Length: 396
Image (tube, rainbow, N blue to C red):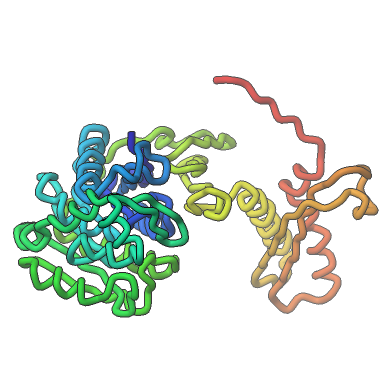
């Protein structure tokens, strides 16, 4: 079984894409996560998966080779087609880029192909095996250190990558091709991009990723690449469905005032938060296992207090006809020892502390500023947070 993640926008996707990760990486690599996030924001749905023996997928990596990777990619495309829609766009990073070039002829409904830092020949990857290459050839297998991790590789892998007719596949791609590569790539030299580009027939495009590293560890580099992919692919993909044909999503209807609905979306922790006719995404940062697709729960809490504070101050100043021109509220949240809070009734364990700094712009005098600071504590959300709150939970 292959582990995968499906990232999708709130409405019917502009198109579905399959993302193949780099050699010994996973669907949760920074490049995969950043690019998928940016494509979702551009209206695309993205399926990213772990090749056999990597990440959360089953199987033994030692038993895999390039051809099995291609088979995994075709299987992922088949699942996407049967469960959600046409795998119109194939995107591959590094050896995953070589895999999408090799798999395209087996995915007939794929409309366009994108490679990022891809080698011209799959056998290029063996250059990074070091002394393990000779051991594999002599002993049949060896432990090889790649990106700080050890993997068992066998002679079958070497034989398989050496036998791939990649040049013929690229020449017979018969699909629009976008080649993205960094000139300073030290893992897969940019000459590989030149060879891919020259071997392919038109329509084809090449865009330099400037000083990006091979793994696209920088979010700005990955987001830039995703923007290029989204803009380029739209030329070759079917026109989006009219608004009347857009698929409805749970909670798409307007909710009554005072009702908020939170529903799961694809990813580790990401959820949709719906209120009235508005929807936003809440998520956790990548550092704690999320995808950083939106504000965290405590961010939303602080945002609610800050928004209420600013609105209350504007309303009060307007009523008093005071010259308040702008309000900025900055908030922080932390857990502190109860013993460090002289005003708190709780004296053991830890309590929550919210710091709130209010900036007031405009020709206000000091008494007016002092009064507005008092009013900040009277905003409804402030009163809710500092009063006794009962939360009733039941099963629907």
